[in-house]
Image 1 (spheres, rainbow, N blue to C red):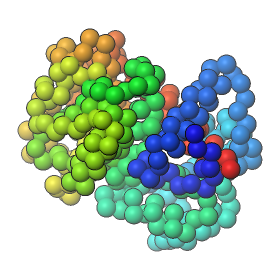
Image 2: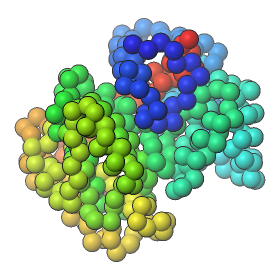
Image 3: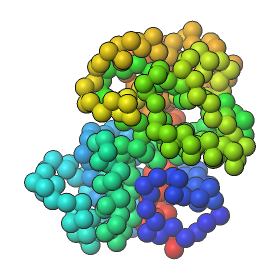
Length: 328
């Protein structure tokens, strides 16, 4: 177990060792147990975290705000459209100033080819940890909560568990690729057999696939890519049917295009779930496009663990803050 985390950035889980992630998970479990019995966890008294949002948020904002409060600290919600960023202030200046006023800076910036670079620019100049609340490439807070939820439901030893990350049709907005990227880079490190399924044209970056395969080889897992959704559902222990945009092959910001409309049949239905393992889990980062991505009878049905998954966003966020803002 690692104990030295203070000041460590949380931009992507690929920059955390397995031992560090295991410590993060153990801390999350302990904080969840304390929450269940209403035991105070005042680990960050009087500490301040700035929450910078370039986009809307429900689970991320509230897990961070509630989390820091339960740890004894305080969150400042910052809508970047009302900051001097809107007038052109650069990441360096924002990072230097905010890091002199508080103890961590968390940021969500999902603009394609901008978000991750912006967080890394802040990290270069910040004297406090930068916490990634989602960018164009990574969503580590979601991925660690997903892994925690799978462990709770399937046990700590996840070797050869079949987990399928499946593209699904949605029209709400052109979503980032950060959730599937973070999942496909994290799960193979725990020996999971990952199937990535999507219609042609919704590829993830080549470097992501190469790195995920390397993790699989090193840890006894596997990564398979298919363009057949039924193959991905068949005998799966866990399924993540979720939309993401075709940013890699088409940088146009239009939500609906001919490729999207050609794949309306990529939907999580009871028929698809019937192909999965008997005790399979349906998971989703939320919000789900209930009209298009998934049938209500599935997301509200016996396989669904979406609310447990969402609650775990609180406990993992608290663990990230407790370790990086406190600790040694």
